[in-house]
Length: 255
Image (tube, rainbow, N blue to C red; front, side):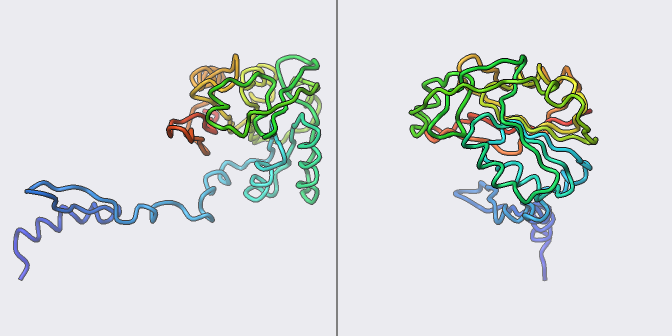
C-alpha cells in the first residue's frame, strides 16, 4: 500500500521528472536536483531549424562568406532561397565558388563591405577566417595562437546598398554578417537593404579582439534603433584560455 508520504513525494517529483530532473537526498536531510538526461530536451538535427523555415526566407545575403560555410548550411535549410555572398580574399573567394558550384540561384562578389567605396588594406591572417580590415589585438592571438601570422593585401571595399542597387531581392531577407569587427561600417553602408531584412545573424564580440571594433552593446543599440529585436544566439565562441564568451552569432528579428 502506498503511504501518504510516498504519494506526496511522487506529486513533488513528477513535474521535475518530466523535465529530466530528479530530487535526491544528500548528506543529512538536504536534497539536491540532478540532471538525468538533459540532452533529451535538445532538438534533433531535423527539428533544429524549423523556426527558421517558418520565417519564409526567400533571399540570403551572406557578408563575409569565407569559403561558403554558412551559405552551404543555409542552402540545406532553405533550398529555395537565392544566395548572394561577399568575400574579399581571392583564395577564399575561389573556394567559395567551387563549394557552391552546384547551388542554383547563387552569385558572389569578390569585395569587402563597409560604409564607403574605397580600396583598403586587409590583414590576411594565416587562419583566413580571422582576416580583418582592422588590426588584431593581443587578446585574440593569446586565445588563438594559430592566428599569430598575417600578411597585408589590398582589397576593394563597397557599400552594400551600392552593390545591390537595382538587384531584385525577394522578401523575406536573411542577412548574415561575419566581418571581424567591421559590423558597424557594414550596417551604415547597407541601410536600405538591411531595412528590408526579416532576420539578421551578426557576429558580435563581448571582448575587444580587433582595434576600434564595436562590441555587442553598440551593435545591439544600432539594430534596436533600426527596428530589430535580439532573440538569442545562433552559436557562440568561448576562450580556450578561461572559458569566457568572446563572440556570438547574435540573431535579430524585425519587430
